[in-house]
Length: 173
Figure 1 (cartoon, rainbow, N blue to C red):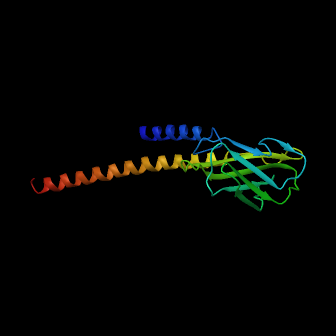
Figure 2 (cartoon, rainbow, N blue to C red; figure 1 turned 90 degrees about the vertical axis):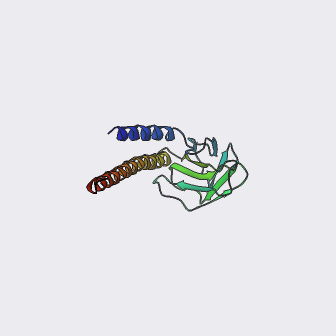
Figure 3 (tube, one colour; figure 1 turned 180 degrees about the vertical axis):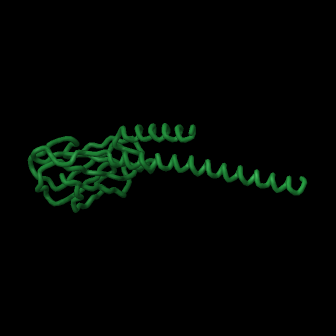
């Protein structure tokens, strides 16, 4: 029971820590063009993200429309600190989400997060910290599995020692 409580507290603390920011595995600030949280009046066909750390060559950017459907897009690294995603000009008003996944060049840690902007009238999807939720859920499951496996191994080892002791006493040792 105590182990379950420890696992639950550890998992909750981990989830709370991960849900606090956009970058899950590395602390990085991201500026977006258009700016995150802004409202634009004209349709655009690209979004640029600028990081405060150098980024790796592999950059994955995805744009979700107000219905949370991923748009066809092409993402690329355009400098040591920036990446952009290109797509057909926006035609639906609402809130758009741009998700990013790349690595920090200096240490290889993941940079994961999302920014949002609104085209036209506000509405549509709101930004959801889906990455933090997924990582937190996986971490909680991993901690629980580790404690479960650990307790089962101890039980198996304990049973084996008891069986050996019984066998030795049966033969008079």
